Image 1 (cartoon, rainbow, N blue to C red):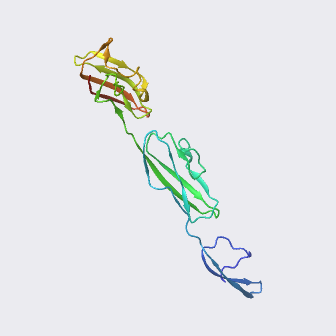
Image 2 (spheres, one colour; image 1 turned 180 degrees about the vertical axis):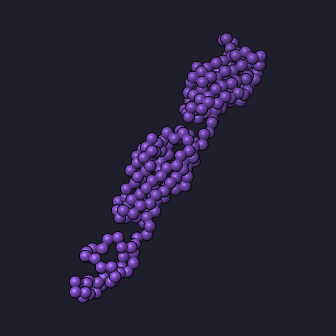
Image 3 (cartoon, rainbow, N blue to C red; image 1 turned 90 degrees about the vertical axis):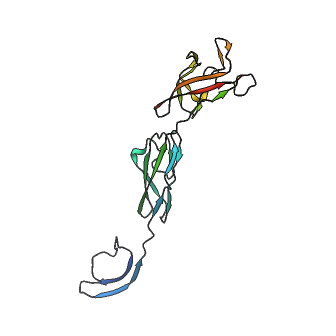
Length: 225
């Protein structure tokens, strides 16, 4: 009854109750009735809590939508395409992440309503490189070799073992840590074809991790006959 215009279709009215009138060029008015526009609840999207995971591990995100009208359209940030398996799906897989990163998604429903959410994946660079503190190369098939163990994907660039006088009794280089107990990469307790007596041996190693960083380690291992 206030803002008259020449269209029977009104666009963009906010929620509320409206009384409709028609007025002709003579100024005559007619009340056509009352209409209530109901605004739906605000569309919400949730990506869950932040994720903490080790470097080199894949994870899957899940955008959960509430209050919207399907179908939904998903738009993940384009610059994340290197790490996401898809940019227009609700559940992309994150892979190849070597550092902490935040991901953002915008969801649009059938009414054109939008909502966005963010999630941060925190990369924990856990360095696991292990050499046993003792081994027993006595032929019983258990704990026979002294080698390097740890997180898959790590490369051992150099592994050396010395006796107490500083003489090198074993050397191996450039092998995956998964192969650290293979005969070529681990020590069987012999030197120049002779069995070594029970003693403490010093070892050093250089490891290269999946993100390219390196670490240097040293320790002692007891040979038990």
